[in-house]
Length: 169
Image (tube, rainbow, N blue to C red; front, side, top):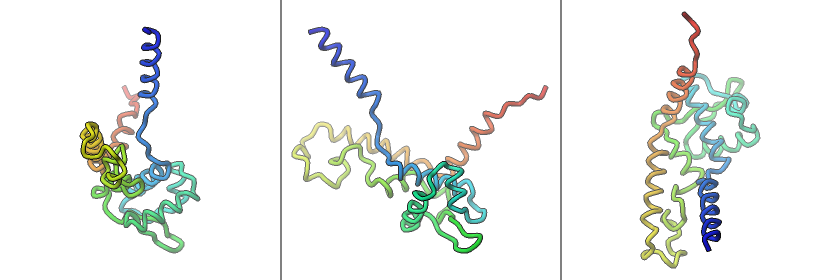
């Protein structure tokens, strides 16, 4: 019996180490595209190819993502020879949470805690786990909505300057 328990515990550890909250590739690309536009805020419109190359996003996916973000009011497009994309709002006002929830929907780790599908769960209203799921949702919201794209631009600049080695004597 001891070996069975040991095997079971090992399985739990494997599952725990491999768990991740799913953020789709589309959402990751959207966040990276907006980050790139935030880095170029106040400058000319940025072409899709420049964003794609800087953030390693396939251009054909990026075009669709930017059109989707344009429909959500996050980016603006400029036509013509010098055309491209710009942020529709200042980077200091645009949060990662705005984009993640726009692309993915509610930030809840389970459907029943997200508010949309309460009726589907036969345990709703008497589930001991609901408060746990709500805490997890609040933690995600705090991180995502508490991080602006301006914060990320500053963080990248800080990390880049911290990694510069000074060989002067």
